[in-house]
Image 1 (cartoon, rainbow, N blue to C red):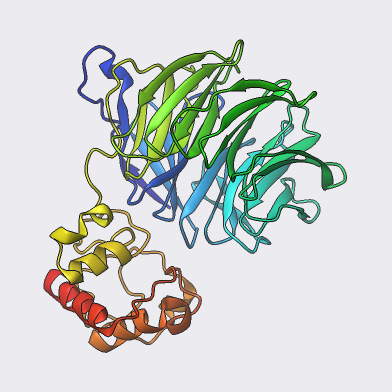
Image 2: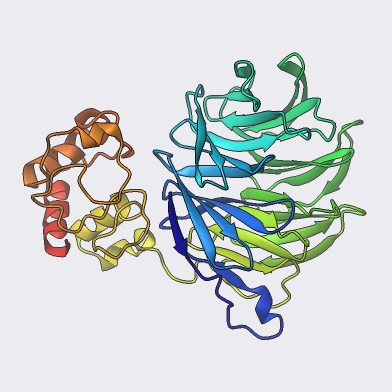
Length: 428
């Protein structure tokens, strides 16, 4: 847990300039966002393995650290708590006042892609790439239950307004409803044909977004189609419901955000939120006038919910790992593709999923001050040099240092490994 001062900087723009703000501090893409019920705080989940707990309109952020891989989802819970899930297959429950882990929930065998809390605050639902939906008692009484039936990864979950059902979406193209009381499947709601990424549940309806760009609203009682909001953009990656229930927002892989009235399902607005997609994270501010979003940038953004400026805000600067390969040496190309999203080459203090590589040659593994290593690395007797770095990428981290946080990365060609090592020597 690190507490730091970070400005929510006002962006220079005409007209509603005060409505544009930045939440700066993450060291990786922002994968999810949530705003508290009172609108005073926000959560951001990032590829840098951390969750940011922000005071909106203020200057303070608390970093919630404990995940051992990218964080994909974060939500507020009752009682001054929050929960997050990610690629380490675990759910962390946080005490927000203390800024510390309260408990770690384990049981999934795949990354945790989404979380939802029941209306009464008693249960947490989780969607996992292991194909299951988890139900976790938040009072600590009783074991979790895992509901199976999807034929591929589960991508999103949401409770019904009365809390008796959990809806789930999946890469298998289906949406299913599960009975909370019996922890069993109640019925198959629909088969879309393409993977379904996200779902919103309202009073008498649910809306979903799919890989092929399909964006539809269904009557949850009669299963009839209420609206087809599909545009020529794909995939649909995120959805948010305005606090008063009167509007939804939809983010896609091409950098656009569409807002839609839930009264008549009319499109209220459609603006480009990013110069380059995707829009992974989306949440309304407490007053419903703004949207908090995130994508491939290390920064989260707040902009007006009905942005008439059509100004590309996110992803205006090219990320290193997206750089044109023809403009790089082979060594740099290997670094940009395999390493740059997690590691920096300099001691710039930036938050990253992995430790800085500055001074890596001759350094013992697991010894960069301030970085939260796994136990595997801290107890490892390895010094990084030409030979050990070559072995790391020849065998892959899962074989060379099993149990580390480092994702599977193999460079099969010996010449490519040699070029990467030469590049690191010249730049660290």
